[in-house]
Length: 410
Ligand code: NIG
Ligand code: FE
Image (cartoon, rainbow, N blue to C red; front, side, top):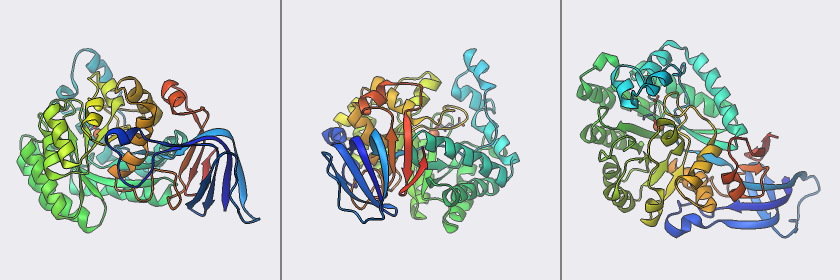
């Protein structure tokens, strides 16, 4: 057994289901606490300096007065890719928009070229480094989307890398197939034919090899229409995959309404989503997965998080790590922006980064809170609480990370 003691404050949301409305801001706080762990599982939490009865061979870890939360969950990344896209910045500074660059054959399509060229092993080695970096930022579970292959061979290559990462790395990794991320050059001007190919060839093979738990689609002006996105997601559902959607990242395009209608587990970005979109998310029980660093990086508005919470939409916050719209693995920066730009409270922010994020990737029963029976994923911080964590910006506040009951950082 492992006993982590001398925790000045332990703060966690409670339960297995996503928290919405007022409940999003409810966190349980234990002062002067300790956590007892058996193998990979949390056994008990004590407070006010009390220690639980534990066997004599229990290993003791002195937290040194640290602030402790559940390990953070990054519910939206595009972490497996070749190359970078720093050459886009001068274009953007001259006024080119994200969609201008994509329509000129750059953007996502540039990364597709670079990803197709790289071997599976090189992609894997690179992504292992990214996961190490995420872990050092206090993230213990991550979702990863494919979508830089855009043909059967290369989508499967990316998804196999994601599967290997889950096996090889301390981090838990959840795979999402995003073959409908852009129309590849072979299908230029023939988006419907590409959607046929995704639905008839890529998704069935992915489902057959059990390479993805979710399917995602980029429903956006000039990318995939609402009707095309519906086809992709309905096909995915018939194959047993869960549904996610990149919705209203640039324009209020109807993606949130589609998510609500289909009862998707999450809709992501939602930068431009209006009241009707928010109502649809609420009616459909869809988690809003918000990506504030992307708003910052693209120079866009920030999603209407306060209205979403007021309308009983569960809000999760993630990084969106990718080489175009968010080349950052630091989820702490998302917490800063949630506080300052979404005006979420530190407590709402913690729920968004832990339990709600875990639920957005189907892991709410195992992860996202510190409670007996849950997996022992904990982050120890060098701050005195969530308010300080949301306020400090730019330095890494992690002191140590415990994943499945083992100290993996610190
Ligand atoms: O979530 N919008 C689509 N996908 C990513 C960006 C991918 C890229 O630019 O390479 C996003 O912002
Ligand atoms: Fe994304």
